[in-house]
Image (cartoon, rainbow, N blue to C red; front, side, top):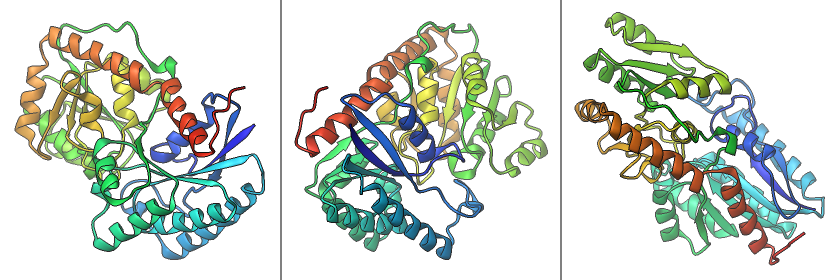
Length: 361
């Protein structure tokens, strides 16, 4: 048996890195590997998005010492071979994980830093770039979620950098999907916050009153209040839903919209699930969106906040044949690149490369 120690948060909340952690804990790893988690869950009442997502220095210091202590305890196990740190490229996170890398190196284990964001969007200041470079250089391998991140990281460090996307389970893939004759419902799943493009969706909906926009997720109530105030009746805020309900709503919808410009975005699970459900997707050119959608899975909007272009994109997919082709392409893309078995293999191959063995059991 061999263990990879994940430095990552667990749910709740269920989104973001924590959602990926939950998937990793359920995944089937080959060659006798097992996952152990050193939980980096936030303490206090900090949320993923919005004002309640702000860090509190004292809480972060306390949290860091707890993480370092638990990591040292986990590394006492001789079966623990690799530590995989899963973080956004934010200053405090990188400083904390640099110490984790030092602890790991002291125990003569391999350390991977896995950036769960789009690195160029997260790195704003020169000192952040300096910390990023130091963290990459002390690591044995770097994982990124998209092409933009890899390009920046390869310029900064000689440490090997690999793109490994998020994944979904095989049972989430829809192989036979009904495509409606008319475009009636466009769905969004995610945080109901400004930088996820919610205001843009409201503005788009106002221009296309014959299409319903269903928004699933928790967040700021000001957007629902704004839609009511402006009498935009074709925007429906349904609140947060469990996974099975979301899957049913994806199957009933006709397209997916994702106008994010969230700084921490790396590779959207919601977008991947929409693709797996066979939905054509209207997305911003942000994070991994273009990597995922390509030229045939939907339409990529180049400029953030370009409402007229989004409206034109939606009008262009009213044709059923267009949506049929996009649906087939997205299902095939997920099946080829984003299914659990394909992605987990990349993780295991990387771990075994680092420990210098090709272990077959």
